[in-house]
Amino acid sequence: MLVIAHGTHKGEFMGIAPTAMTVTFSGINIYTIAHGRFIQSHVNWDMLTVFSQIGAVPVRFHAPPKGA
Image 1 (cartoon, rainbow, N blue to C red):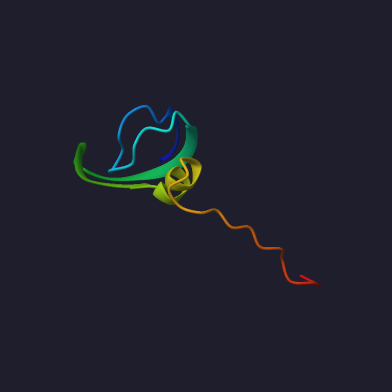
Image 2: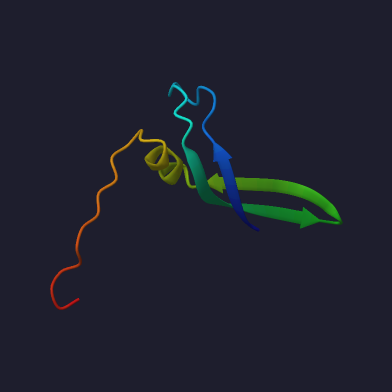
């Protein structure tokens, strides 16, 4: 299941002081179901996007090579 999340960085997050920046990012949840019950759940959020949007990591854009 693909998940899109939106939020505002209002409180400390993983040691990063609040920035009041808004973020939009995606994640994926993978579930294993057997005999009508959830057996496993794997969740992966795009945290690099979150950290980039709150200014915790630099965002670098590179032009594609000529002819690409």
